[in-house]
Amino acid sequence: MNDTLLDVGGPVRLTDHGGDGSLLLLIHGLGGSTENWDVVGPDLAEFGHTVAIDLVGFGDSEPGDRRASVEDNARLVAEVIQLLGHDNATLIGNSMGGLISIIAAAEHADRVERIVLVNPALPVSRRHPPDFEVLTKLLGPLVPGIGVPAFKAYRAAHSPEEETAETLRMITADPSTVSDRAKERLTEANRRRRGQDWVIPAFLEADRSIARYVLRPRRYRKLIHRIGAPTLLIHGAEDRLVSVDSARWAAAERPCWEYVEMDDVGHVPMLEASDLFVSIVGEWLGN
Image: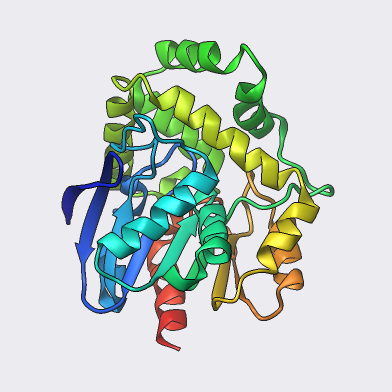
């Protein structure tokens, strides 16, 4: 595992997990970083040159004059593929990273060979909308005048270790399924964020851009029907952030996609059931 900084109008941190052949680009979710892929990255390297990316505004990719919206980060993904010397790549995106993969596949089709959507941000289910805690965490910061002070107050009252524990409680079906090493790495990333004054504005900008898709199902439907790349959709059945109903809707809209539902798994299958996740992705990549 090797970290490097790529200059794409500013720093972009990459974690190279090794491997040969076609490029597998791992794309994290909202508030995440390359650390989200540390558990599965080395195993996925069996199937291609595997690289995780810190999107602009996250991890160690300081935005500077760049924007942190999903559209801007989709353009970044297309540029990174080219700068890494590949014609195209398989995008493996979780949550916001899944939505970015979808946008990249629609807007930059020549750069995208295949996509693996891992609990992607999807239109909110009317039957099973997110619970109150999730809505408060995701939509509360979007209220003008509340976002930045709320974030600062939360971090003043919680240690990086407490932030990791609370996040995993919300995004996993069972936090005990996440390895201690993964928790340590996520906590290290949380600790670094405390010293980065650009983190909160970037988070809010990205969050607002996601809302413009997940709260507009017609717009989202048009977007997914533009995708021509082979697609694997994986979804944890116990996801509190993105209901499995939304994943079933997407699978019904695009019956040509392969759909795999993971029982007893929440929003981050690559952390909760890493061996099974790698097996599912590896089998699909090998077909």
